[in-house]
Image (cartoon, rainbow, N blue to C red; front, side, top):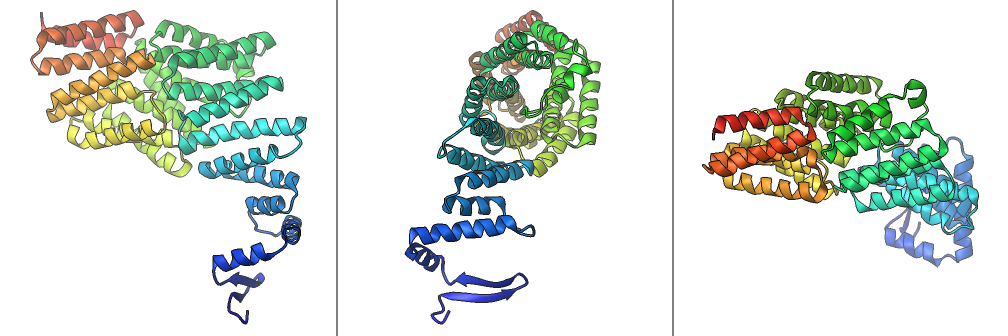
Length: 460
C-alpha cells in the first residue's frame, strides 16, 4: 500500500483491497507460483460455498473451484449459474454458462450421471439459444440434434421427444417445413414403439402444425382430431422441458386450421380465450408469446387491424420483460401491418421491413411469405406498384423453396390486385384464378371466397 499500487477501503462487510489498475493485478497474479494460486482459489471457493450469507454469484464460485483444480465442484456451480440465468430469461448468459459446463464435463472422466447431466445441459442450451440467437439458428438446431442423439443412446425416450421437438421448432422457423413434418413422424414412431399416449398427442400436434403450413389442411385437420381424442388424463402426463408447452399452445395453433377451413368465429373466440388463460396463469412466458404471435397472424388473415394492434402491443411489452428475439420481430411486423390495414401504408412500411429484416437475421423464415404480402400491400398503398409486385415475387419464391403453401392463395390474390392496378388485366385474372384453384385444392374456404370476389369484380 505504501507504493500506492493497492488501496484499502472500509466497508460494512469489512476491509476491501483493490489494485490501482487491472494490469497491476494481472502482474501480481502471474508472479505467484501456480500451486500457490491454485490453493488460494480453492480456499476462496470453499470459504464462499460454506458461508450461508455469501452473496457471491454461482459463476464466481465455479471460476474459483475450476482454477483451484476441483472440476467437480466447478461443474456443480456452473450448472447452477446456467439454471439461474435461464430462469430469469437471461438467455445469452444461460448460453455462456451451459457452454462452459459442457466444456468442464468433457474435461472429466465422464460416467453415466455425467451423460445425463450433459443431456440436461444440451436441452437447456438449445432453449437458451432460441432466445439468444433465434429459433431458426443453425446453432440451436445443431444443439437439439446432439441432444436427441445422446438421449437415444441413454434410452431416455422422454428427453428424446423433447430434443426432437426442439429441432422441429428450429426446422419450422428456418423454413425447413418438410423436414419438420418428418420429425413429427419420428416422435410418433417412438410413441408407438413404447406405447406412450402423451407422446403420440405431441406428435399429432406437431403433424397438424406442419401439415397446415404445407397447405395440407385435410392432413392438418386429421392430425388435430387425433390429438383431440386424448383427454386431460393423457395431456397432463406431457413432460416439461419443451420449447413451448405443446398442450397450452395447441389451441392457438388450431385457430389457423379452423380459420382456413371456414370455422372463423370458432377460431377467433378460441384464440382470445387461449391468450386470456395463459396471461392469467402467468407461469409460461414462452407459450403466451406463441399464442400472441398466432393471434397477430390470425388478425392478418382476418384483416382485423384492431386485433393485430392489441396483440402486437401485448407481445411487444411481454417480450421486453421476458426476452425472445423471434417473438419481438413478429410484434414489429404486426404493428406495421395493423397500420397498413387501417390504410396507412407509409406508417406501416418501416415497421414491416424492420420486423422482416430482424426476423430473418435470427434465422427465421417461417411466415415470411405472408409477411411479404403485407409488405407488398404497404407498397401498393403508397403507390409503388412495381416494387409491390417484386416483393410478391420474393414471396412466391420463398413459398416454392420452403413449401409454406398455406400462404400461397393470399400471395396470388395480391399479385392479382397489384397487376390489376398496373392495368395488366389478363395477368390479374390468371393470378386470381390461380389463387382460387390453390385455395380450392387446400380447402381454404375464406381465401378462396376472397379471390372469387376479386375475380368477379375484374370481370372477363
